[in-house]
Length: 304
Length: 100
Image (cartoon, rainbow over all chains, first blue to last red; front, side):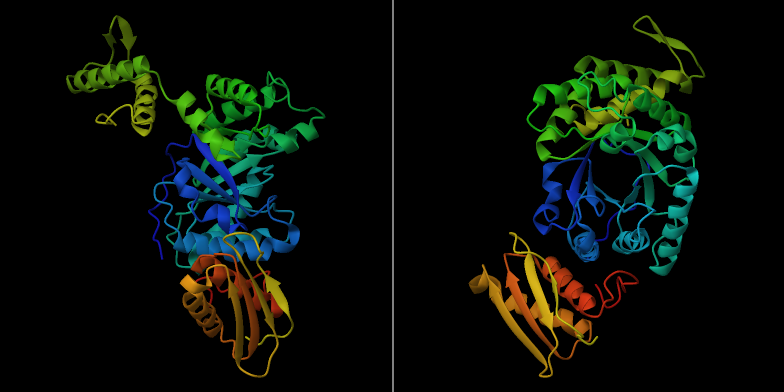
């Protein structure tokens, strides 16, 4: 039995890789790829008549395999299926770090899942509040209700858009410049930031189109996403490289954080670093840069 | 649990195992074939028998075709096949109890 440490609501989640929970060949060594989180899937990747089998496989994987620092999230079946309650029981009993709610459309959906999670935590003697939640927004209604979804529970750490279903609802398809989902991505980001949780972009499914993948990543980074859902290990490295801060950004962030600590200890609130005005508003951003730098091996993380 | 009808779980993919359980009256009859029989045959057999014991299955013909599955996968496939044979695989599984 592998006791997993208590999940952290806010941690680095640049890459979240999907894996079919029913396939032992995939899930047995998923930690070697070095993604920040793995997403064991009980939903679309698992055929309707194998949902039961996938849960047994998932339970023993969670209990036996040491995923180390890799976060383990499970995507459960939608609330309109007969599967989601047992999905939640197995996730909680197995000690998954978090649950991804598929096709989430309202705060009520989050609360419904939260109630079942709480019940399962009591049933299996798991610490109350341990199991985190995130929601996947897959429909126009989900996007429009993004803020109420993001702020529906203290367990919520993030929200993700799911491109396939969303584009279908919108009667559009993938566009290289991202215009098909620009409004939805933007709206979801604003909602997530307003609620103080993380925000993740959808998968990029054309594995042979490296150029298109990079273009989408750059747009993701520019828009302010925390990370991206992935379907193949080869997509991990480009994301980590692109989401890494530049050398210049790291040096700047270190100066800002060090100066802030010094100045605030001396009772000064606003000051300058290299001629630029700095106050407390700059600190969370600088600390985030340093955390990223530490995760990327660019900095010893002495200041964070 | 009593094996009420034949049931199968698992696949023949690499790292997996296909487990079939069938009703029987002669205790546990295990038939095992494995791609790693020489190295792990005894271990696989032990895991299958332990799992059946935990589920309190007394009579069962069990056929395992192993393709290099880890112990945790063997357990998962045996349990799923047994629960399926009783039509109990879909809900209220005793996670952490008989299934562990």
